[in-house]
Image (cartoon, rainbow, N blue to C red; front, side, top):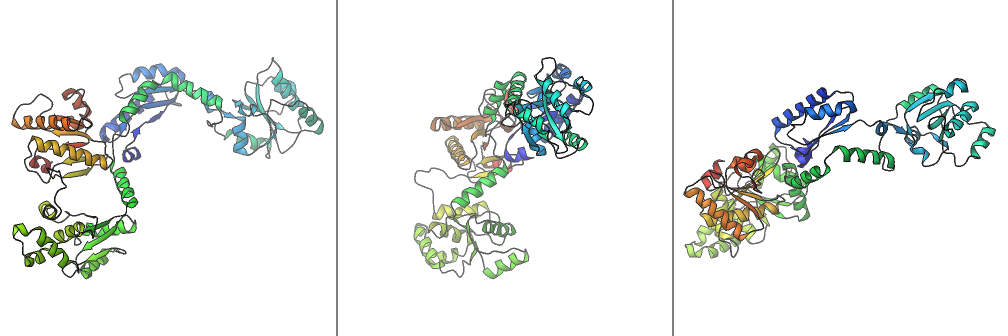
Length: 518
């Protein structure tokens, strides 16, 4: 779920420790089934970690047909072992004698030295941590001798239990062996409790542990196709904007440039709830249009508090006359008279649009209650298009479960021609990029590539050609069917080699009927 929300590539790690090859392979198949059912997470690769060495080849054979890169990392005992330094830090033991290098000694096992020296020496093994009371001078001296002797394995270190320090004469001997390569630690607990506590210490890889890091890197480099992994990361990096990321980015941008937004449709519960949230989070300055008593009463009924939210009644507003005069002037070529302009300014869509036009607000958000035509007509009449613009079109941000897609045009142009389709594709792509969505634009039709014929397909094909000529920097492809635009497996067969097929983020529909019904 986190990988989905953050648009991250998923890297599952399957536990291999204590399992045979068949058990690990079954866990991988369950993972494949889960991912196939969810269809929301994109997989980078999968790892089986700490696999018993004698099961590695068998597991690789069982998973050779895996649909995604699968890497097997065998168990390395040296990576799970604690070091003397880790034990000292974890248990806060006093270090009596040591060197920085000696603190990196790996501990393979613990030996309690409670017997006579001649019997104790026969039990020493490589990388042993010897635990003994501090008054056992014979064991201390025997351990030191064994560590420097070629006849015995290397000793990892010693822990003296019960807070018992070596005798003064032994201390004098140890101090004269400076530097002492065998670390000696002091434990405040008795021997039994010390053994229990050291057995609870788990080995970790610290940034300062150069040896463990080298072992881990060597294991990674020998078992993982690093180049393949790097290429997959580059290919999939930053390609998906999730709804959570989209909302977060929108909020942060809005807070960075706190604007004044008018929301005309105050009668809608969703608008009131949104106004409260935006106000509480200090995202923007909000103005609602409507009769203040009615708006406040509805908000109270819903348990909302509109602190800091302006409420303007178009009927009684001091701006109404100014807005009517301006509208009359703008529409005099359409025979709009003052009385009609005065009445028009009661309409919340016209009033809100005039607020933006005259600088009383920075923007307007509407369309929750009113129709598309009712929402955009005032903008056509009052604000008009910017100089040089040949076409006005719309886009929808479709917040799906795992990504945000852009659909255009689904609201304004009923039957766009090839040139208009090219304009819609370019402006939709640019808008998507403004909102942090990497545009890979699919111009949709009922056939993909060169497979179909007919006037509708040819018009889309011509639109693609025009869009590419005008904006060669954009990734635009078509004609393409919707399934080929979103499904990588379909794309490989229908549009091989396309930069858009299988991973489109912007969808341009051939007409309003198709777009609005999708």
